[in-house]
Length: 453
Length: 102
Image (cartoon, rainbow over all chains, first blue to last red; front, top):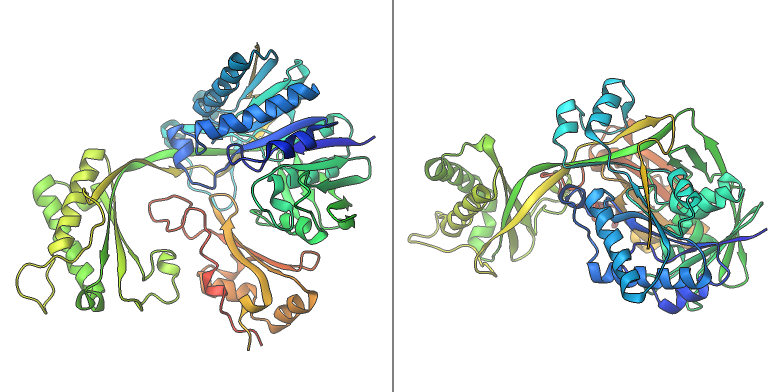
């Protein structure tokens, strides 16, 4: 028996050709799509907002639902709205409901909530069932209480439970990217190594092709012995090297991928070309873990940010930039204390010098200015937006006119491209958890809700 | 002496989650891969020095099947923290690009 699995694209909202997905969906067992990532940083989990625009997410969802309903197969969306907390899940569900209303579609919709209840988390923490990964920030009860949102990265079991209700469309909060694609193959008795490995390749859409022309769909055909992977778009192709290379992407270990119930081991895999565009993968194994654990993600408010960006072009300022910035920082500190009554422990100003070491910070091996200009980014983080804005204003205005010994009289050192030079950037967050939670029941804390549409 | 970029087909860094940074150096031919491997320019110690982490925190893999080196280290700052400089971790590979290979 062969099971055909389809990934619409690597991230919902980044697009794919409608034709690619429709070709792929023919004869498929399901269509899946990952919609989340921690890659763009803690803002999304902290704020409850999504990275993809609503219109772009709706377009991709519309094509997936159309193909799924046409074929009569399930459509699975995981890590809704980038971060998969409650507001993200609700945002995604509303897109699905709106599409159904507009197009008079009817189906059973299941949603999996993966945002965890605070009291539940505190109880688990007290019981020692939340343990750190490496490296991890220090976790305390206070942080568990203060975090804006905390999600558990669910495995494939909640998807299976949701499908057991008869749902055709399943939208999950935060979940393992791979679990979206492993859930149905595992239910149909595809061996675990094959199901998880194919899922790992599928979750990034067409990323595992030799030359990705644009984000697009990917197909895997799974059976008892292994799986065969190829792009439905004939203008792209998978090669053994492109597929094996993809197992490296965004993993810290190229052979082992940790999932909630164990680890995928690809160290003994064989990758063979099938025709011009497909690759056959065999030899994947799955090693069950002693404990079933789900990774936790949380974001806490770091403060409010205001920024100002200006160019420095004067060669005399450039040649003494370190001493210029050194004395400037002292003046800013004093002015902020005098004018706003704020002490340096109550805010943070980061002076980022593009053209010197801003990209790599302290790790920059050549922190010297070799060009004829630099960009100075003044980055202010404070307890309130109004404080951040006020400090930023003092900082850029002081920097603008800060003297150098070669000139007498008032000078203007910074070329600001904008008015106002300072921009309020809103709330900023930090990731505050890199821990796992041990579960007795893989579906335990994840509530499933079903609605008829 | 060629520089690493002249032998590799891809040199990249990227987040492996918000707390780790991973580097991939991929080659088109086994010959180039083996040449770099034999040069001993890419080693766990080299990464420890370049990225200022204890060598025991460097995970170093030479992946023959993928014709690739993969190296993972703890992130210098967690992704998006106030002291982070690169949210995606996409530019940390830069000091590797021009390494001279024997």
